[in-house]
Image: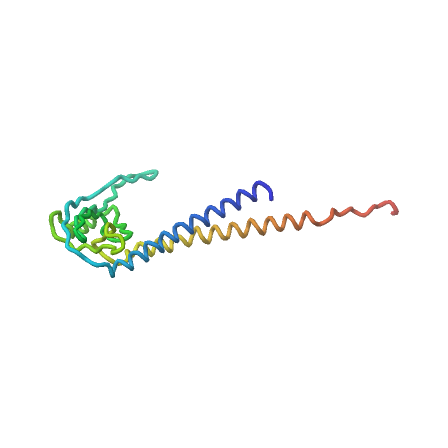
Length: 180
């Protein structure tokens, strides 16, 4: 296999591995979110509720990205915990300040909240059990590098086989024109 084909094959494998990583991460997030519906609940207290933001820039413009950030305390079997997750895979971010504020207004600091915790790991908790709709988008997103990686690998292997077949054909000697 020549250098270019190895590079193409390596790129295909890298895309495939990236897709598998995103896919299995997405499946894990989705399953954990689905399991959280059955987690036990306790009362907790919101200790902080702030609007996080950062600036994202592209070639020609910059804009603010907002996300609600909460911290809450709760106790399970006499042990105190601090939680920071609104939901499993929570990705409520965007550049709409009013939407971010409406999300944050659901969780005013000092208020009492219902906390759902993982019974096998009580330090893992959420305020909103269930799957985040965006976790399904991550699964769909993973299909792109998976398919692209598979296609690139197939093309590299077919190209390598074609080159091998061509190399196996004996060279053709043109007929001699001596007798004419």
